[in-house]
Image 1 (spheres, rainbow, N blue to C red):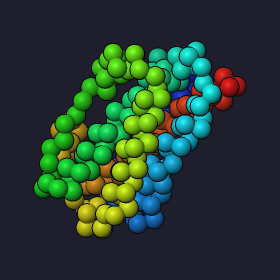
Image 2: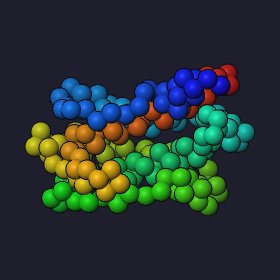
Image 3: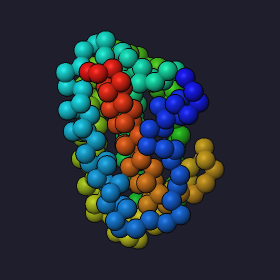
Image 4: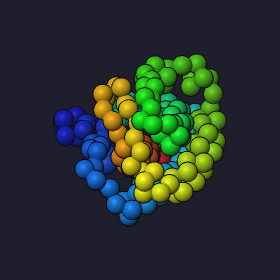
Length: 180
């Protein structure tokens, strides 16, 4: 596989770059990406069998099963990060080892349907929070120790909007490439 092909499999919507600034229109689009993800995931995967779930979405990548559990883990953290950012002054968030979490027993033992339920519930709450934030709320910040930087909540929204599209496309491309 050529490096460009691998890069496209790894980053199907492109690499994430924090925007310099954000607009209300951009925020609405990112919220929409987050809002629609649970339904899109459920519709795409509702008839998948065990073998399909065990298929990696790219060479050296997680299986579809691990990826859905990762989305639940990541977006639970997202929800908590927004709540912290809205209730504390520039709180330091807790990073976590995503790879280690994807290898834990809850991921290997439980069906992806469990995490699809989590994603659905977390996204309903998160979207409600996001739609009710003011322009000033989006200017609030968190400190990300892994990145060693202060990040505005508007930029965190950009990240998780991208993250939703990024992983949805991983699964969509897997389905298309396997002709499922």
